[in-house]
Length: 510
Image 1 (cartoon, rainbow, N blue to C red):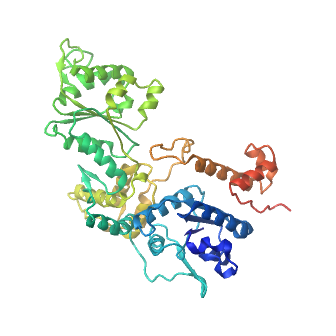
Image 2 (cartoon, one colour; image 1 turned 135 degrees about the vertical axis):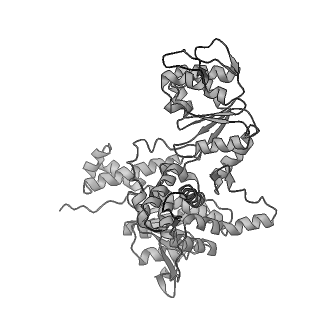
Image 3 (cartoon, one colour; image 1 turned 60 degrees about the vertical axis):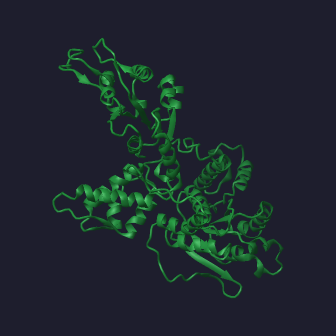
């Protein structure tokens, strides 16, 4: 798969008289064999469409190339951070749509010097791609780059962003925020936005609802908010709502008096009372049974509780911080969570992003979690501090982390145990990684809306996937393939194949 920016010389190709003037992209495609090509374009849309049409007619169709052109918006073609973000977002999106990752080649000869430099760094680190360059004198050749970079992609991100951030500082722009909030380690923009909101929420006493997938650090965020609040000298009482048996939920939250029920052999203080003056963290609040939700709502509204079996009420001053890995609004619609309680809890809503959305955070998280593991294991017999090799770190950087930060930490713990020496190598990480689960059937339907969804591209991605599978399963027989995907005829299938640029496999039938 060839990946390239479109340059000025490329856009002039449709007008070229001399075949040697068709630009670096077309020259590379003509000289080398590829299955796919991804072009990134930030120029005038009309010029880009004209070039795309020319390229499809003159090269892509003739060579059976699957051609994708991604329109990107960058305000400055020499801004490393914008270039890096555009490349990684577009390329990662393209690769996710493929069943098998192709061998990658990056074209250095189109675009600005900053774009070429970014290709070199990414080709030597995150993507491990072949670097190609072309000229009229030497033709297309593999670029000789006499060094390797054994660094993680997250370090590369900072290297590319460094000049832009330095210019911001010199121009009087805002300086980088700190990299910690409580025990939360972060560097990238997604967590920076979350921490800014959490910092604003901390001084208030109003309820906070933290939403996020399992393992995203919701409890860590709750603790950081409490530690930055005026209530920090008072306790933060942590309640795992999912672990409370339904019949004991009221007692756990509000306490009970001796003899209130079988087994109540003494008075028991509940979590609300224990958190008086401080905060109560209700983890997985969506797991509470409906009856307990009613009494929780009253306690929040009235600021008072009653122990089970007692006829007296107690005034409590408690700040509520709740967390859930569910979409509580959907739970309300399904009748599994009380609407009035939802609105009581959802005064300030924070969304903890999954690790896959935390650009820039993975490397400091790896270093921070490993440092914590070393500190916690320091007193264990025979333990020596673990370090991680560049190759092992690169393997961690490429992993998808469906279990988020919790999965990352547990993987490092396993690798630290399996490792024979002080340095954890790639083989130790490979042994420690859990096998990937089969993707859920609703992965397409369950994508988050907060960051936006490209619906036309999503539909095209689904269409390309099933059209390609159907054609392969039927050895290129269009009539049978049309039946498999529910299309009326082979002519309709042909139209769909052309619309979504799906290459027809060569039939193996005589």
